[in-house]
Length: 268
Figure 1 (cartoon, rainbow, N blue to C red):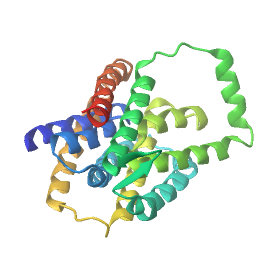
Figure 2 (cartoon, rainbow, N blue to C red):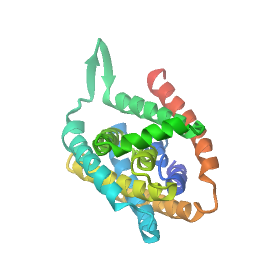
Figure 3 (cartoon, one colour):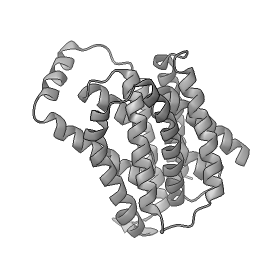
Figure 4 (tube, rainbow, N blue to C red):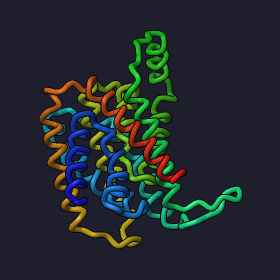
């Protein structure tokens, strides 16, 4: 199973390098269902793996000058603070089992169901082919010029921090469109900036978890190295493979994964 897990993380790294997000969504399912790691620990491992992998990819984009320092400053500070608080103070106090309206819910199941819903929403955003809507674009442009623009970006940063802290996903599939809409970055620069934010969020979130769990460092470093190789390959292939064609295909794949996780956790 370890070989299958390594191959899966190589692919995850390549996806991160190619489209700047989405790949980390598969990290926790691979850890839980292929490598048989408990969900709460899997989210911690995912933060480390995604953080190191995104950092490797971000370095290549920094060298190309395809990173916005302003966007990182406006967006990352809120998300970093939130994800650290989630991992340090909130996740450790969530009980292994708790009752909700007469239902007994395990922490493992809650994490995986929330993760499945996140995967499904991400797959929808990747699958749909948005038609140009000039009226809508004008409204977004007007909104970003108002005083509400930056506070709204900070709010989105907090939301990303909550998501990253709870399920261990980087949130790049949300960060990229936010950067393009509110920070007006082109696609390549949005990917590079997204990788920087994902790296910061994930690494800070992982540091917030230290002391709460026993970690297999050899395993973490091995998986991270494989994922890092994948993201370097993805970055090299990004100029040769059309992200417009890749994104919907990956969206359909993540949709299948999301449905599988829901069925597995709720009905099986």
